[in-house]
Image 1 (tube, rainbow, N blue to C red):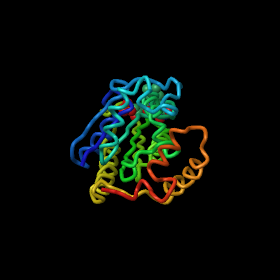
Image 2: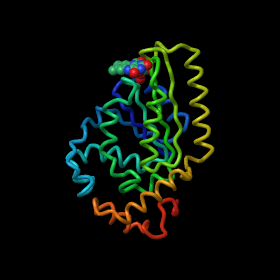
Image 3: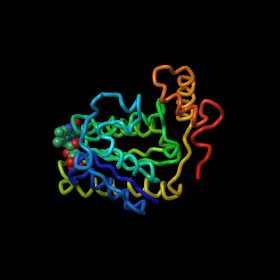
Image 4: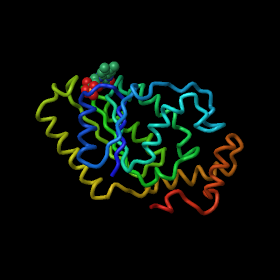
Amino acid sequence: MKVTLIHGQNHKGSTYHIARMTAEKIGGAIDEFFLPRDFSAGCSGCLACLHKGREHCPHSEQFGKIFNSMLSADIIIMSSPTYVMEMTSHLKGFLEHIYTAWLAHRPEEAMFSKIAVVVSTAAGMGMGGVTKSMAKQMFYLGVAKVYRLPFRVMASDWNGVSEKIKSKIETKTNEVARKIVSRNGRAMPGIKTKFIFSMMRTFQKKNDYAPLDKAYWRNKGWLGKERPWMHRK
Ligand SMILES: Cc1cc2nc3c(=O)[nH]c(=O)nc-3n(C[C@H](O)[C@H](O)[C@H](O)COP(=O)(O)O)c2cc1C
């Protein structure tokens, strides 16, 4: 199995340790990225990605490496400490660059069999909202199954996390890794994905706002009977 591990932070605190231990428990090769070290831009709002293609984004080379790694991975693990009740700005900045791969635009077939794990820690509160938000991002990219790992660590770094909380983290990460391994790192999209896909298909049929999106759907055969989850390898 190949795991792409994206940290929404540069440093190796609690969030890093939990995400990394989850990747190691799943096993296989790990392709790891740290933000902002590996990608630091916010979206410039030029909409080149929407109207011309993501390769026309002024930041395409940098984020393309991370996105390509996501596409070739079996498992995507995304981590972010909770900052002011949200994911880090660096992670949000990266996600802004791949929004045209959402179900509403030009989703990638490869995403529809993938599993993601989203990890966040907070000293006190907000980590559940952050993992919910990160899971939403994965869902709209077409990822078939998302596991959430929010932890209240009551600490500002990994050394400060109590043994009791570390033992809870150990149990929960074991559980998620075991489930992923038992699924052989693959999943089928659920009813919600299929429902949103069908809504987007209706929209694409009438779409005269983003011709690139419509042409993409037509070329994939999705305006007819083809579906992105039909030809799983
Ligand atoms: C800029 C900033 C904002 C933070 N906001 C929150 C917050 O909204 N809620 C919270 O409980 N902790 C907050 N914290 C604390 C961290 O979320 C918490 O210590 C987290 O476990 C740090 O993860 P790390 O060890 O991976 O850096 C904040 C810390 C920083 C630096």
